[in-house]
Image 1 (cartoon, rainbow, N blue to C red):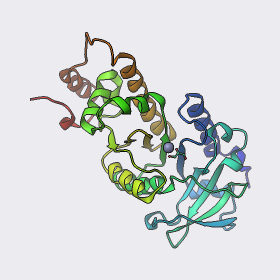
Image 2: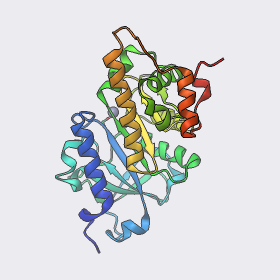
Image 3: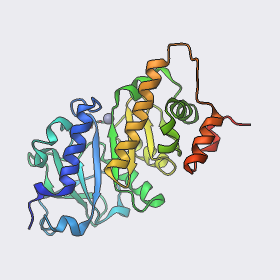
Length: 272
Ligand code: 2HA
Ligand code: ZN
């Protein structure tokens, strides 16, 4: 059996949480990541018949029975993952009843998965229906994205349109736009269900005045989506209270979409 601490997926979790912390997106225990793993690959590092303990999830994830995820721990700091992955991360498998997580590794101090597991697993279920290759769900509190939430309409069309106008790259990176939820209580099945519903059409979902969710086939895709929104939001925050002299027009946005061959949300533009 190979040493789990050398597994590429543990390395990716360490590196990503450290990056997100350094960017100031994940203060204290803010943010969480879940990453669906390949059973065969995990089997090279862990005895899959050895369940350390079982933890009820409090919701039904029948569609994910047998699936294995590496997930950040509840109350754990992204800052600390790099130096102690076995305490701050866990590897869980959804048990045959669909409502129990079998702990295969990690949460060494008796801890458990993030309080946002409902939003994560429900989002995995929703995304796998539209993209069978989706693997990552990522939640974070990027500073400028949050700041923007307090001064900009929390409307999907308006917010996506503003972000698209902030950098040329936005239309290429998230032509499918950004879903938006109003402020809601976090850590509940209700916010999980609302997030998953949005994930049927978006890879990015803003939790109004709380943070953002991004998903993808890879860690880079999910991270890159959030990073690009945050860059656009930063530009917005830098210019929002100054006179606008120049702008990327809707015609320019169409030109970008055509130039890069991306399918975009036409209803998010104001073309006649
Ligand atoms: O786990 O980010 O949404 C900490 C959070 C809650
Ligand atoms: Zn949060």
